[in-house]
Image 1 (cartoon, rainbow, N blue to C red):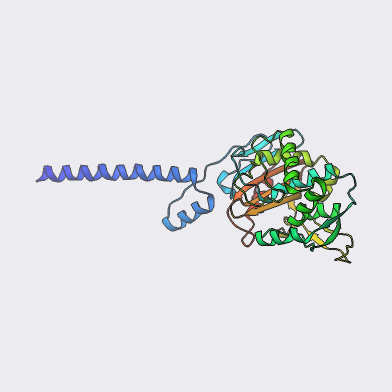
Image 2 (image 1 turned 90 degrees about the vertical axis):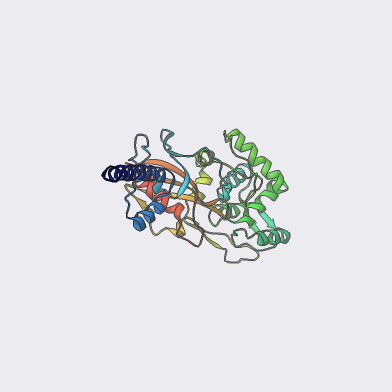
Length: 322
């Protein structure tokens, strides 16, 4: 009987040891794949302490905890030397949502001979956009608007009618305009990008990567007109036939920020994006200690009605730069 009990105890100790090993393995796997906010919930409920893994970024930035970012895809670039400081699945395909409008705007700027040209917005354009739930600038059917104000409408309030209005005026149709967008993407080396519209509305074949969007933004910022609009917090359009006092736009990024300051610098501008499939996206520009940085993030959980986790990620990253 004594021998039996001793054998039974050894067996229990062996089973307990195996369970401990399996528990440790489960914790390790969890730290690799769960985002930080879910890890925190597990810690609270189970009493376990699970540490998040770290990405060791390159020179010029502190250690960044990868899972502290809500976005599954991110890239940070120092524009002074074109060095990539943070790369998180930057070549993985994403849906760009309204980050698309960065391309829409720069193609318009480069193809318009007169930025003060008057552009007519036909009624038929609006019916489709309303039915698709597209974000709008606030222009009305049959309104006549200066091209420059439409570009502000594209980049600040992310207006779909502004995008289509420019596309139709420049190329004759959105389909033909999208061809110009894809040609520009090819010239910029955006190898993993394909556009099917000028607005960023969801489409299975409308895709990009945060790396490609970063290439696009870096190029566009070299254009003075684009940079001026992109870094504006608000803008009031000139009077039109339907808005005698103009319309005042506010940046979709800045309206969700109570401050622009980060450690030793400021966030200068940005373009947000959201669809149900793309989730929350952001392409932003910051100046820190006299140097400029661009950060492109995508695929953060949330919506326009939740906390703006794309903007939270921007502050997390920019505040790590030294």
